[in-house]
Length: 410
Ligand code: SAH
Image (cartoon, rainbow, N blue to C red; front, top):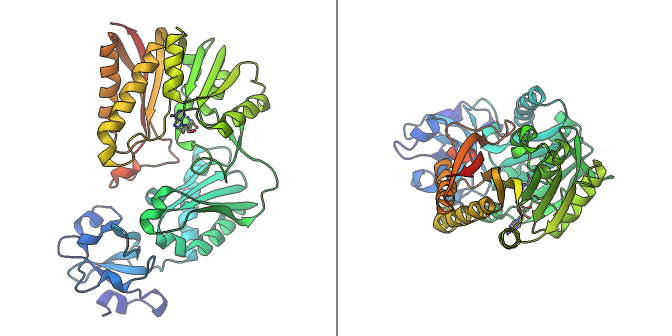
């Protein structure tokens, strides 16, 4: 492969092969985005087949101007991602250490204790990498071949910056198949000698970071859970799609009279019971293993009423083509929740589907309400917590939305 002018200016270690973009295809990257799609590459100048999955590259525009360094996956629709603008730095351990330090500084500014998402992929300049912190235990997830190749350097950089007791690779996300990466979850460094704990607002939760969902805990909802306190005093609360009881236990700690958590996962339900006991809340918190839709129906038929219902479901719209079906699921579950709300009850309802917009969720809520002849008052609009910062040029980084509503008679 021919060296471009930029590469000639680089030292031998950093002179990566060039990935040439077609004319005009540099605009999005210059506007801040980090992704290159395969149809944007000038494959005559730089055939994608010339790159190994995960190989480092210099991304170069049609006028031979380098945009920065990144990595390639010829097998993926997103065939390259920009890791660093300019060509002054190689993609190596010291660059990762630098980026981890920048990410850490934000979290240390935001949080008094070391329990947070430390790296949120593209938003923290590390596309394809997610890192959650549980005190001195790290749960990390890689979703691209480029980051997988850097795995040892990432681990070494985490050891240098965080000095953890253990690093767990939670590399079992379904999106890894898009990059033809294997699925596994294992300990990559150190040892796990005790149950992993996360702390939130004075509560402790036991988290299974190897067998649990995603990277073990949903830090993205923490700031939203902080809004519960004034809404739940003496209330009867139903936490649907509860996972480990994040919302439910926070509600109980804030003075709810009775909390029921519902989740389809048996291990999550068992963990809720342990977590309730651990925090001295077992007398007020119960957990039911059930399908949310069936359980809501049964509660409606039994004429049960709750002052506050929380809906924090998994993504019902995983791909764009699932939109119609997923939208209906949001509409149905919200309507079912309203049917078991006590008079003037509070509905906290969320969606983590990127393809379900804020407006689409609000429409689904409103349609459900009209169908039941109710009036919805939106008290607050929710978004992901600040340890999941949004990247202004990458809409996919803004995925979590929700509403706190009061539902009253029409
Ligand atoms: N509210 C949680 C996060 C929920 S993640 C928190 O704040 O931490 C979504 C949860 O929904 C998972 O725990 C999953 O087991 C559960 N789930 C998925 N489909 C379900 C269904 N049909 N019925 C009940 N629970 C379901």
